[in-house]
Image 1 (tube, rainbow, N blue to C red):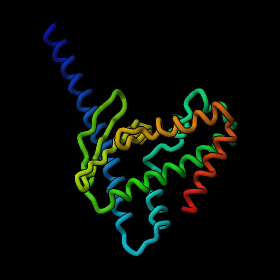
Image 2 (spheres, rainbow, N blue to C red):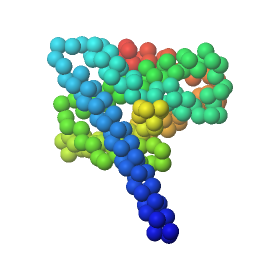
Image 3 (cartoon, rainbow, N blue to C red):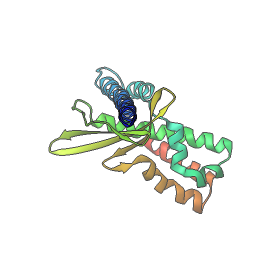
Image 4 (spheres, rainbow, N blue to C red):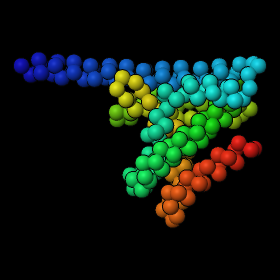
Length: 198
């Protein structure tokens, strides 16, 4: 009886381990496919920067959960302080900013080899690290994913050990805390306009 119980328990553990392995593999495939498509789009000759940006946005939007990233950046304390209209505008502006940041980061990796490490299961989430070696310098990225239904979504990206969520939270929270949601939106609008004129 005890042997049968141990066998059943071992079988259950093997099933769980197999499922976890399959999950990390699926998440890893999702990110690798996205990165390959982005780098391929950036390497296309005869296309303008705006055309490449449009293509990159089409590729990364289904994989990054940008609306969730917007909420996480302000957190449970400050997100509710925005009205529904302000939440929508903040999300739109923040998504535009994140897309441009990722585009610039990916452009730096263009024509270089991105090396991926093995994906790690972290609770119910998956972390996937990668790096690019160039002229003696190593640039690291860490994709953090969660499962939404049957698909994996990126909810944060660390570049050189700096979380995009934490980085922008440190910038945005003092503005909304010490001033107002309207001041934060104005800051974002001006920041994006400044980038367009550069």
